[in-house]
Length: 297
Image 1 (cartoon, rainbow, N blue to C red):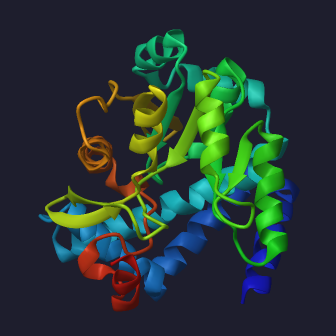
Image 2 (tube, helix red, strand yellow; image 1 turned 180 degrees about the vertical axis):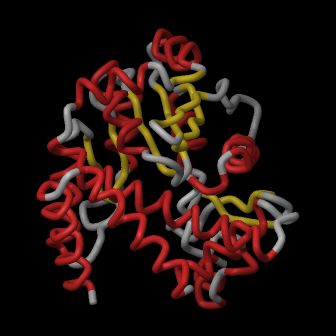
């Protein structure tokens, strides 16, 4: 199955480059609609997650929200496959007009103590990273080691081509020393932080339920004096939205308390743009498999 996934992603990159962009968009949208009708495990989990975000949704409204969520996720993949050969200058010109709260980033960078940026799996975070590299230089981020290795390497090559410094989560020692080094040199670390992959994250209140989120962003900021910022990303009909929230205070707070503040920022943007939150995996503790809860405990 993992080999088939690698072949599928390789085919996606070739397809997007071989057909007109409008035709590619239609194909990805049709694929998303098919996935919504088939209602497989990912679509069903997305439905459970979105039902927590929009508890007042009717069954028909939730059907439409899941469909729109899968369309948004398909758009992310279409843009991912397109990005290596796209006109980056033109994209960045459009992104410049989409940035909100940029003063928070400028102030954090001016302090010179490093910046930790936490973001959820929403919108197109790769485009946000491309914008950051072009305007402020390279940043470090942690990547999950996918299987097979060929698929993992494909994504490493893709993101390195965008200028990201990638630190493997596993298989190359602890990522923490490299991240600490980047921050202590006044650099930037960006972390997707709405899903706890370690099983050792903080329990946070999230849309009325208990969920787990990683402690890493708060701990890195506390250990180095770096500023902790949260950004939200979403799609618009003809572009993207990206917002930097005011800094999350870590001084005088436990890492768990700061992580709750990060989760609150995530919730603000996800509630405003629920269809663009690409969370097709269990997140709330009530949804996690028993074995995963036992390992975490």
